[in-house]
Image (cartoon, rainbow, N blue to C red; front, side, top):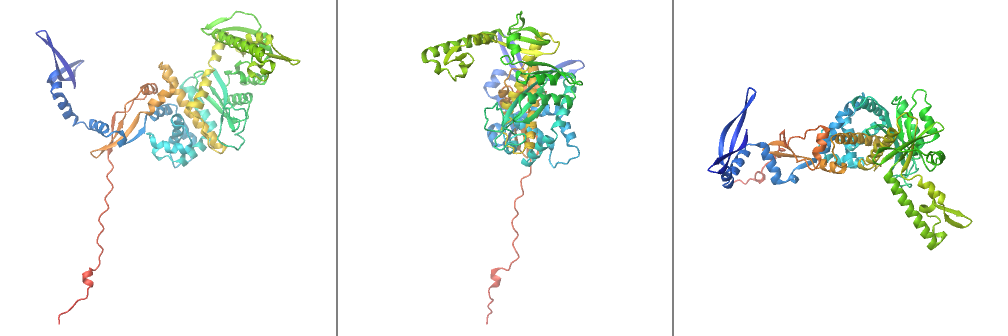
Length: 562
């Protein structure tokens, strides 16, 4: 049944009446029957008849009673817990098959707690409230999720150790499941490295001091190397000592792809920090699994690139609004020169500004004023105590404006090579999410095994985030990740009791939270859910029974009459 507005026109005037109507299906047709006409709309609203009727009807609805009580008393009067993230990411966790995989890896080991729920709690904490395991154990009490109520701090510690122990098997299981779930063919793999420091002073075989991308050379660190597919989904990850160079990390990842994941044919895409003669040899000389490659070059350091490839004449082919390419072959080695016209103009303007400032500084303050200035160093020539502008260096720098050069051994057209390399932003975004949104730090663990387990939990969280982000992209959603997480956290579960019954009230979806639910394929819970009978009140302490003692009056001496 529903309420309908019935319009009637009489004597040139339009009157509106409210009716209660019932719909019934008769065969293939739907018929409507008027149950009652409540009266003229404007009259029953003005005299309060409609409000009184609604109030009377609402008194028979238990769900409306719950909502009204929550509104009148306020949510602070009842326990509320964040509900949105666990609903959305819990569905993705299930779809990725992680409960079954973790149960299989646990084997016959008997944990006195729910291992899968604790692993999900670790991953969810990285997404919502990054912090130490101690902070995580306290955060769990603010989250509504099945199985979270029994998780203790010691369970988090034990799960971190378990994840470190099964890291390789977990990576392999997820890889083969992803190939079945998302795509059967892995054609492009993007590889990059980063580092993250730890809050500790002592070094260990894993935690070492090295080149810090976080600008914290005073702290030891670990190096993270990750490989993602063309959609940005993590394929493999490695955790290496903090003093590992990029080329060695690259070699370790290639070995991992070949031996552990049994990848036989793939195109590896990596940034210029990875390229070296040894890197190329490592990729191409394997008899069983030779990999094709698309590698960025170091234009200033590689003499063949700076003096031969960039100097070679040729016409550029337009690929996109901001991308032009041309192919150059030198000694059988194939290079793709890429140029961004917009960046070319910006680079030229920046260099002209530097040279103009250099000339003015030399004229006003003399040669000593530019010595040691890193911004001027590449354009300065020092000879016999005199400092002059190196015009050849300026001209050589101009050849680099808006350009980057790729080396490849593939047969792909030049435009496809350039576009594949441009997709390297996916792995860079994965690292940006890993170190900002996911917050690999803070890491307070003091032993290497716990550090590895902590980072494995971070990558499980990264898989959840990339999965949701990919689904949002498919829907064309442009919502920013921080805003989405903020809106999801505002969806809360409020438990309250009314007339001897327990209920769970869901708060309204805020902002873009509905985008996450739709992308993950999760239907928001009902506004009010009946949970069962309320817990009976604790029994009152019964009044203590009087002890069997002799009254004081009976202890008085008895006097007899004489």
